[in-house]
Amino acid sequence: MTIPTRYRACWITLLFVAAADLGIAHAQNYPNRPIRIVTAAPGGGNDFLARMIAPALGGILGQQVIVDNRVGRTVGGIVKRANPDGHTLAVGGGSMQATPLTEDSDYNVVTDLAPVSQLERSPNVLVLSPAFKVGSVAELIEIARAKPLHYGTGTGGGSLHMAGEMFMIATGVKMKRVPYKSTGPALRALLSNEVHLVFATAGGAMGHIKEGRLKALGVTSAKPFSLMPDVPTLASQGVANYDLDTIGFMVAPLKTPPEIIKRLNQALVQVLAQPEVKERLAAGGSEAVSSTPAELGAKLAADEARMRKLFPQIGIKLVTPAK
View (cartoon, rainbow, N blue to C red):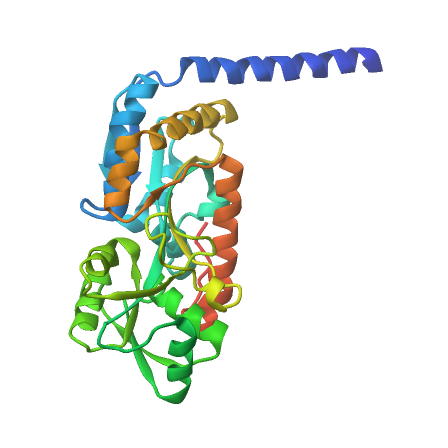
């Protein structure tokens, strides 16, 4: 029997109403047990970020928020496979974005996880020893074209490495990469004049800059960095289209109801507006930044597109994530 068009329309309307009511019910009942934030190993930047926001987030939502440390490359997959009810979340950063592009992984940040909010931003900063008598980015470029310079980096594909490679591509200069395990050893090498410059993390460099041990020539983000108001961007000094920000963010399982995502996002906006949270982030070299889920999704997609283009140019092989 064929159902008349007017009845079909009524049924469709009722289904939409029922779905909306179900979504509202999910949000009203959320959270109904402790929330788990999965993140990387203890002591790292993502762990610090997760543990800093957890108490404040729990206070706003009325449930305990527990930080669950796992091996970094597994975090995305754990959350991807979790029940999409808002009780399992992840705090991630640059490594979580890059891992599925360079290693066999069971997740992709853009396609397999739901964005909730950005949490922080921190550009890298181009630093030199004061003994290296260079007063501007233009002067540095001129010197680099005349003689080979050495720049210190962390691991391949990390922000220090990417910043240096992006600088060479944008300016046409050639520099020799000297890899170290992380920002700390790279900066120690700079302080002992083993290398000429480092595109350091802001958190790693700020203390040295403040004490006069290092000189900052520019930050890597397209917009100024509030924690270094006297340091201009590289883009403003003629390095065309240069923009590199390291961000921290929260994501959820892909099919988490929009009403729950919205509730989490609203709570995070409140958390990141708290003066004590801003102060603790600033002490570590990061600026508290919230976003809408759509804004975070667009940022993650743009970052992935840039990495997919840049990595093959700098000798990092891309892999297809396992399904």
